Length: 72
Image (cartoon, rainbow, N blue to C red):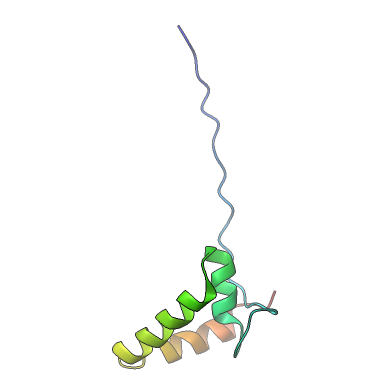
């Protein structure tokens, strides 16, 4: 009978931060893109679409992330 030991896989913790290198305004989208490992352009387009289609909700979300997220 074969025994297998389950080793727990550890995921890297999700850390929100603002990017110093990939920034257009405050580095929020650049930091989120680094944390999520996605293209920063995709996040920027999504934020603009959320702002336009969501009645402007993207602006306060971006500002609050700018204030709360530490700079890396």
